[in-house]
Image (cartoon, rainbow, N blue to C red; front, side, top):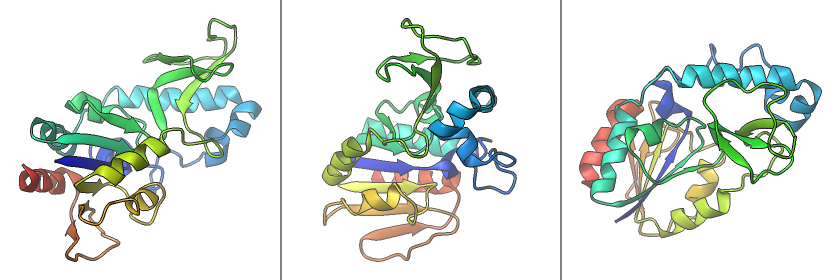
Length: 223
């Protein structure tokens, strides 16, 4: 069976990764456009690099949780692709081998001269860290106002899926809401969210709980 999994901030929150929507969220005290837009980077690159350095350091201190681990086990029996809005690598660390990052990856950087030059990066990124063309490196993150390069690939995967799991992301927010409309008629949708925004019906099974308890239940059903 082909399974597409759409994940958002809620799946990593239980590992200790703060979400910018939380009241104590990581972006509090930062205007989002100052740290997550090309204009913000042009105005104050040092502040932007510092912001992502802090996030990168924090990511390296946390571990995958039960939701990440359960999703990875699905690969034993099914053809699974995870489409995530998250920029962390917790799905990969849990063992998932087919992960599409819609919004980029925190542990990668790229050249401001050639966006195809992408490098693995676990240390701080500073002004003066250049690519081979002598241009500054930047976080490999999709900022506001930038194209989401993997969205078309994600659409194709959702179109072919026999089942779709949505976890840690509201059905009201792009890209999950936009992607779900591409699901084929027979595909069953499993929605895991402590405060679900949709109701259960023949086509949708709702698990009104956190990712770490809800996802293992869905995985058990699909095994």
